[in-house]
Length: 137
Image (cartoon, rainbow, N blue to C red; front, side):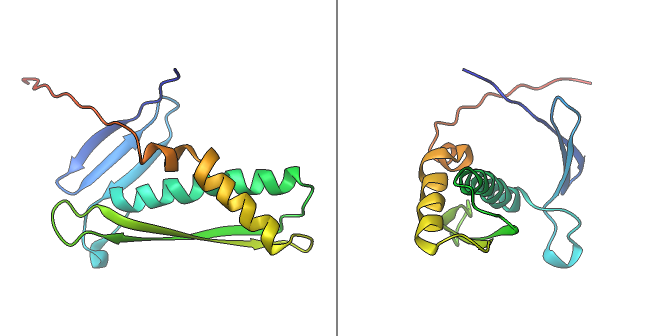
């Protein structure tokens, strides 16, 4: 079983930074929209889902020898009104720009990507465990 990890470090009360072992950095904040400088954790979840599914969809279309001029996915999540404000529903709208692709072919690729190949979509169903510790300065 392959493991992945990141380290998330507090920069201020509502600002965090995530770094992977390769040194790639993602800034995160939980400010209100008017003060936003970075994506929130819930934004990043939608970003992860959309980008994971997009990569798989594009690769499958290219494997079918289709020209991919451009591709984007608009990801929208509906959140629970209470606490925690988890996503109750997530909708992905895939938009492919291609001169030689067919709607039904792309729809099948999207379904395969989201339902079978996207690791993030599958991870939303995973078992989550946790531990904690306190370190004294």
